[in-house]
Length: 197
Image 1 (cartoon, rainbow, N blue to C red):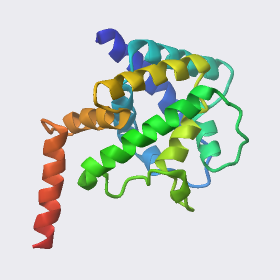
Image 2 (cartoon, rainbow, N blue to C red):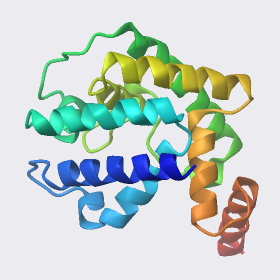
Image 3 (tube, rainbow, N blue to C red):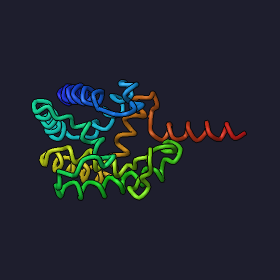
């Protein structure tokens, strides 16, 4: 576990440096709050296997050595400012699997997910990027090895009755001080109900 945490910390350090230097006409809210960026990214990586984390760390290290900002590329792809370069079939295997998990998670946790990204790319709009477009843009920055390993992680999560979305938010719930995801959802439901009274 300690090795995983060390790898995640190395990933976060590289990603944050790239993220803070993304050229943009307006700064993203997360760029003003690096700790929130780290928290959410750490939660995402909590569900990845050690081999996937190691492979992604190598992707980042290679990108840094080549002076390539993977996060700048991701955001440029989200806004369709760059042509697609990565046509790995693993991307087309991962996206529907992740989208299915995200939609199911939204259905089960509507209070937690209200105000979140809309799930499907058909819901993209100016100033609003869908979960699907965001994910695909990020996946395109990964190496084939990382993509194949991540696909395996997601299939294992699905087999266990979970998903990347659920695993990510379970980690976030604990980081926010809740004993479970269900407690977090109930707390939000109660809060909204009390505001209506």
